[in-house]
Image 1 (tube, helix red, strand yellow):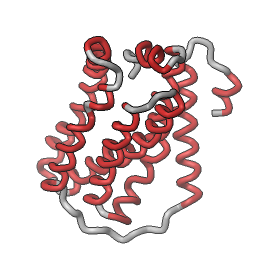
Image 2 (image 1 turned 90 degrees about the vertical axis):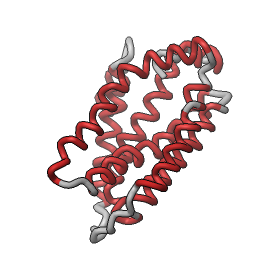
Image 3 (image 1 turned 45 degrees about the horizontal axis):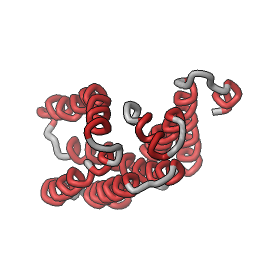
Image 4 (image 1 turned 135 degrees about the vertical axis):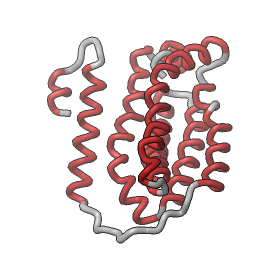
Length: 203
């Protein structure tokens, strides 16, 4: 998204700096909802949550690609963040929950390495896509990947036995979500050239 910001801004008739809101909206949604993923798995099961997350993320990607204004794009990025917040941690739970102790280190390396490589490849891919295609393909590329991921999830993701469902600590959820969301938003503000220090302090 960051390397594509000038093209997206021009297409939506907003300054390139305003596209930072699109990135922030996704990151804040992730930060707010990831703490709920473990409880969601206990409540609905790994397979249901993971499949639902893939569907939400893929459909939101299509809607992001069809956005005609900054407001629309931000709104659909929030929905995409809902899917992403459930997809990544639940996918890791599914893998580690079925791995023998002797294979844990190997499986953790399989999970961690893509996350380390992606930030290196993604900016190059974003620049390449927006140079030789259009910014819409930043999101449309997720459609075939989402279909493949869903098919693989149907075949391979196990339905782990549901554990005892603990009562949801609503105060803890609220404080954790507000805290993580505030920290993420504050970090986004600090990355700007002239951040509003009052807003940063409040966040």
